[in-house]
Image (cartoon, rainbow, N blue to C red; front, side):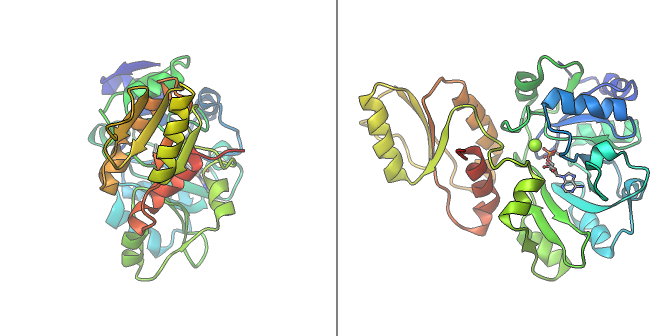
Length: 322
Ligand code: TXA
Ligand code: MG
């Protein structure tokens, strides 16, 4: 892939059935014309993604929901008006003419408007929907810069429309509106508290099994290649001592500063205490430490509060061991 800022070239590439990775506020997406099955297939090939994983359709205006979904409940319009453009993906009943490749043959379709000026321009100029999974290799950490996309997809053909680093840094929240009671399928950019306020009732989170299926059928996902472990600080310090004894390099992401007695063999990074700042940097941090040839990435456990819930979910997935 090739990095560019030329939006007209990007629109042309999409119209020609080629891939264009695009910036969003959450993470970079790997875009293709959602009306062109040959183009959509290229997304699966480039990512190495199993064909039974459905794709989100990105659109440029709220009215375009009706181009892809039918029997749209009031709650969908309410949520779209409140949170779009933004990090909320709605699962709705699909229209009959939506390609099976997009929905993995299901009756539902996932839709959102991303909040990024360059990509909103792209969508408006393109005029139709773009499928857009995160622009990483299947199972790997999602990309939050154009350079991250290039790291994963350099061998694929297409363009990367560079919109700078992503502001939010975690994938969209996915809400299923197919049943009478909405259900959160993936926690993410928009908080469940904010969604409950708009719908005026508490919202259930799908059971672990269902949520895992939604965002990748393997528990391991969003994962660096280096083994990652989520631990309390005292356990990290014990581990670090062991790695030091064995003369093995390791990486640490901690809220605390590097203790003075720890040698330079340890790549210690102090991470923000505030969840929005923390998550803006998280994927870049994981990718950076992944390149250091460390024996392990030790990540300090985050607080068990609602503000950290989506982040805790990603850390569990990043550190899952089979
Ligand atoms: O923030 C985001 O959502 C990013 C940016 C690029 O928009 N996209 C993203 O896409 O994270 P992806 O494909 O990496 O994750 C989307 C998840 C997938 O795990 C997929 O299983 C689920 O959405 N999904 C898509 N369509 C679905 C459907 N019809 N029913 C249930 N889950 C669906
Ligand atoms: Mg993904």
